[in-house]
Image (tube, rainbow, N blue to C red):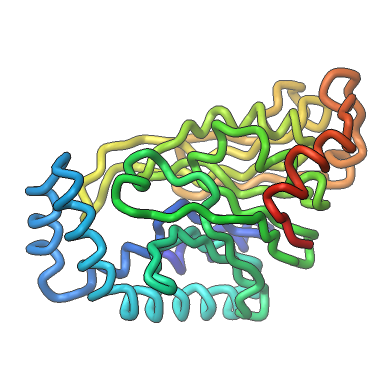
Length: 275
């Protein structure tokens, strides 16, 4: 299915293809005993102390297999289709800490950028997921791309910081770990950038219950209908053309009147954002 989605997007002219959060964890479903492991975790639902311990033990056992299969798959897809892919994310264990890490591959199949999720959901925090310390945009042929999670859409700061760091594009939105994708529409307007929100439908092998349609947002003045929506539909593969020059160049008396010195002092330097 991953190959089909990428092929459909590329055939429609896409230069950047984005997948939702935790796409990488689908690799777990290919492991022997997956159903049994998932059942054990579900039996501990809401028993946060024991669940967090079981979650860590499971990650320690599978993250090597998951990471290798996930990253190799999307590297090959990006190279085969000659397209930039924001490949979603996966849980990793690094220096004893659990991170929720996003990945982006260049059209050559090279890893062009990663981002540790800045705002884990409350449930993720209870499971021991550690937040990222800085925003690290990925460099692509389309410009800098900020890799943000579903929970970040409830916060305006990551988008302001991304825009101040020269990102015309952010990938954010639907996530099994929570968040409010429609808020991305407001973040696009505030930060003057395109926000790509991959969709999610059903729970698949994990049994999650959710329904978020994919959408692409931009500032009001840069959209044909002047409502901030470039495209949104309940489809498997959503594609649209976005004029990045118009997005970054448009001026709106309300959204464009920013005090960048305030943004720099309040958001950029204290959190140690890197160039």
